Length: 223
Image 1 (cartoon, rainbow, N blue to C red):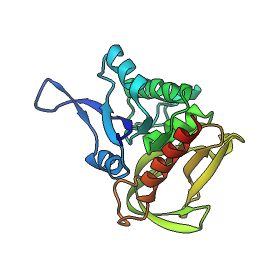
Image 2 (image 1 turned 120 degrees about the vertical axis):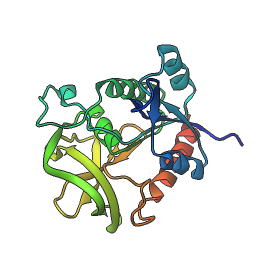
Image 3 (image 1 turned 45 degrees about the vertical axis):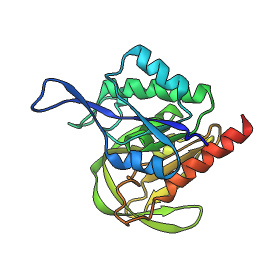
Image 4 (image 1 turned 30 degrees about the vertical axis):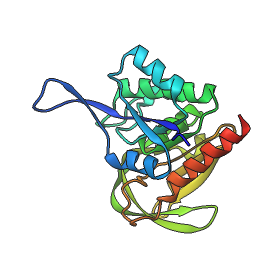
């Protein structure tokens, strides 16, 4: 059986010692997709319009990978302090989300991808006092009560009060109550603020890639 094609959005940076642009992503994202039975296809903001169109027309699922925090102009707010953001990448990922939503394709968001999916679903983000950084953050999976030890690296978080009735909170940070996971009730999409591919637990959150695979199977069964 052919492996489903999963588009992974990645960062596009100027290499420090080379004028050529390079696309960067932690290989563990692709590894997680392969272990779940998919074939990862990487795309960055440097892709041409034709390349984007081809990728989005052929994808069977979308993984929004980690990166800089989502730019708050998405919901008409100003940047709060000096933080890293990537407007070009945001634009690529809004396009990818719209393409996946139009075809009812599964979406899995991680870190930046979590914030992107949340804002696409109508929520806002806000700047944390100190951010979440490091590999020892306890997160509760609300449907089971299980506690996962997670790796995190973000300065913004999803605003709890801005989450609409068609979105379910699935995970919370046990240190400060920050929203750590979401699931759409209208589309086959879910996300987590932490990094399951980093595996500091070491495998506490590896099930999320399996969930994405199962979501893909369920969507195929209804299409």
